[in-house]
Image (cartoon, rainbow, N blue to C red; front, side, top):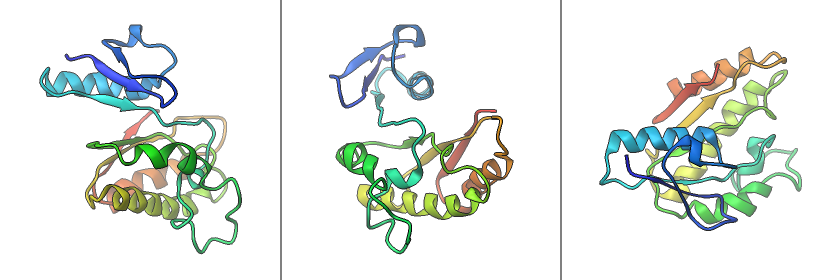
Length: 170
């Protein structure tokens, strides 16, 4: 397969040909991109724009307009949207990998997460200008907290929303 190009917005574009040649990047994204490249063939370039921050909430990745109407919106909401996602959302892309949820999981978190994820998805699709823009989300893995209901909510989103897919990490 063709080499994968990658940037984390801080460095210049880098090229990787396998998981062993990569360091300090999302293994999830790179493994997906390498598999996609093998399927698409040498004539189709595949790139990764890594926009990530561990332990973040979905609210931090949404713009202020998407969060209107929520009384709990504060200065930490939209921080990663403003600082990272806003600039790269304009890049030409064919899909979006979403691996987030730990900070929203917990007692009752699945109810509001479904609502927020739907608003997040609509925000992304509106800004990209494609009502069918695909998003692949990762179902949270097993951990020492009761995430079963949250993982079920993640699964239900794939049934309720158009062009939303899920990969299980369990």
